Amino acid sequence: LHSGALYLLALVGGFGWLLLGREREQAELARLEVVDPLTDVPNRRGFFQALAPWMALARRPGQPTALVVFDLDHFKRINDGYGHPAGDVVLAHLAGTCKRQLRDSDLLGRLVGVEFAILLPRTNLDDATMVAERMRAAIEGERVKTERALISLTASFGVTTIRPDDSTVTLLARADEALR
Image (cartoon, rainbow, N blue to C red; front, side, top):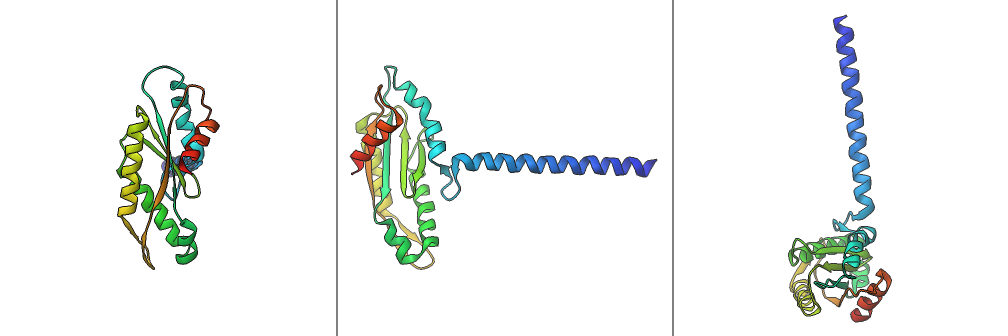
């Protein structure tokens, strides 16, 4: 009887352990749906999910919210010249550099490839432009050490604020136009 109880206890414990492992896996899968694993910032889906309430708030009078988009200049040259692993190191380093320039309330996201966006709540166009310039200088001022080289970076920025009549499409189009 005693060994049967121990066996049952071990069985229940093992089953609990399996369930816990499955829960962890599901949580990680859910996280990967909205977070870019390379840069550990929201991916396009995650960024747009976070942007949605700010788009709604922009319809009310009050503090402006800014959007900054930026692209790494000549990134293809890095991938072609030093390889994709070096490109990955550059992108991860870039995300870290950018996060250090932002407030806790700001949100950096990776939209696609080397295009990133930053949501700056309660920030007007002039202040957002200063943030973009500070970030541009920080990116340009650092060199990224990879296995094969020390790589210098530059980035181009576009800045806008959310307007009451904006959709995510019009907002991004205006930010992209400012970037070009």
